[in-house]
Image 1 (cartoon, rainbow, N blue to C red):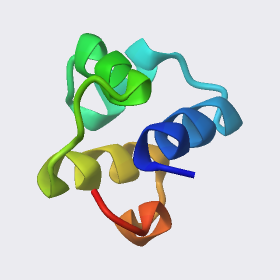
Image 2: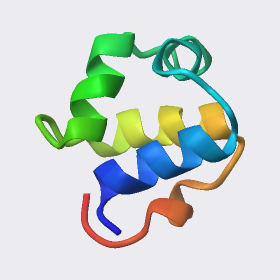
Image 3: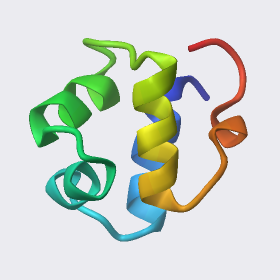
Amino acid sequence: MNVAEKIRYFRQQKGLSQEQLGKRADIHENTIRKYELGIRKPKLDQLKKIAGGFGVSVIEFGGRI
């Protein structure tokens, strides 16, 4: 699973909308959408915010960013 797929997977597992994740991570929902679609790749600081929004470690995203 790549980073985009993992973001979508965790979001769906937590029962969150892109908007809700965006609010939790302090990232605009459009940016979350672009990450999930693979249009943009999150930098490490953004990925840390997303992981925090899920309540998981950034290590869960593993592999390349």
